[in-house]
Image 1 (cartoon, helix red, strand yellow):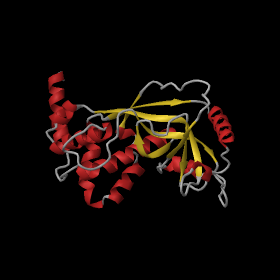
Image 2 (image 1 turned 60 degrees about the horizontal axis):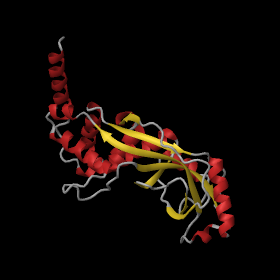
Image 3 (image 1 turned 120 degrees about the vertical axis):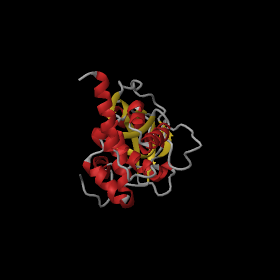
Image 4 (image 1 turned 180 degrees about the vertical axis):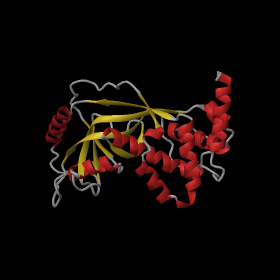
Length: 261
């Protein structure tokens, strides 16, 4: 079989397999992105951030949280992809032993991280959008959609020691000393999971002649990359090189009444 014939057969296969019942992708883009980010964090054992952003949960800074109440719950939240909301409290004044270096970027196919459980959750959350979700999953799979993910880290013990020294120097003995209303504990990241960019095979998407696919993938990329677009009027915009998840050193949690993990 020559290359041209193989390409024609692939295009025919893409067109025939598309979901004709799908309508508009706008309402499913953000939930699918949420599922992708949670799945990526779970894969590497990181705590997902509730608001991924460039410079969020940075190594060298201390944050307070209002939930969870127990440090041990952070492990469960990482395993289940439950996001953590952090509030910056202070920057460590003592330098860490060495500056964290971003590791080599890894390309991850999105259809490999949206696992069965994540899909089931999306179907349950959006029962009236099953056709659109089916089409979106097919678009991500058929066009080899992928994200580039990198990380940087430093020894957890080094961060723990720097935090203890900082707290002693500033007279911080309990979480209320950090100034946060309703704060339950403090976190200092020692590893960051960073999202660089989203890619898909544009030729395959266009060749399939399925407008839903193209629209969904364009919106997915715009919102994931944080690019400005007059067509995107709602939903979060995620800047390139966003920290999407982190590994914490926990401190100042009272753990009163908590069950040890």
